[in-house]
Image (cartoon, rainbow, N blue to C red):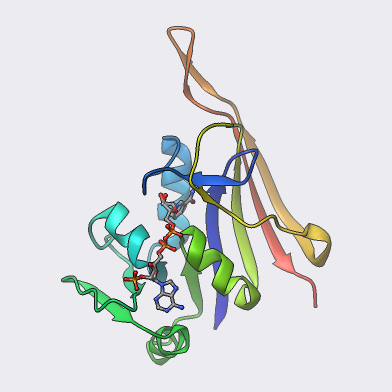
Length: 167
Ligand SMILES: NC(=O)c1ccc[n+]([C@@H]2O[C@H](COP(=O)([O-])OP(=O)(O)OC[C@H]3O[C@@H](n4cnc5c(N)ncnc54)[C@H](OP(=O)(O)O)[C@@H]3O)[C@@H](O)[C@H]2O)c1
């Protein structure tokens, strides 16, 4: 089973504030849905609470040590048990979907990264640890323009990149 991570981050590696996202980019959201649909998605308890419900057409796995439970999700207190659950369901590509704590802890397991680099700088309290791209190969790249409405940035510009870990 391949282990992938998917994340959107700003210019200073910021990913969240007050347990919420920092921007609303509908195209990125659609992309996330298309990439993760049909798969197991693994997240920390705080990210699940930020989303608030299991995402449709995906199997939600939540990591928690505090006994968290919610209808429609599978909770694990051990990363390997979550991986084993996905493997037992014949998953071929598991997606780690955040947040900061989970990205950092599980980064050593990641084989493939789907990254949205957002043209955003601002207050944040959740960050991605800086990635050293020298051990990764870029396999896909696409740029998206900002959406401006009434002279204001409604949605920032962003670049979507896919990276695969070098052997
Ligand atoms: N930009 C993006 O792409 C993106 C994506 C996802 C999330 N985010 C943002 O990230 C922020 C949340 O990140 P966060 O770091 O605060 O929280 P998080 O990683 O979502 O969740 C942390 C929680 O996960 C559980 N956990 C962590 N490691 C564990 C382990 N090894 N075993 C069992 N349980 C474990 C613990 O839950 P218990 O306390 O219950 O034990 C811990 O408190 C939010 O602002 C969110 O909006 C951004």
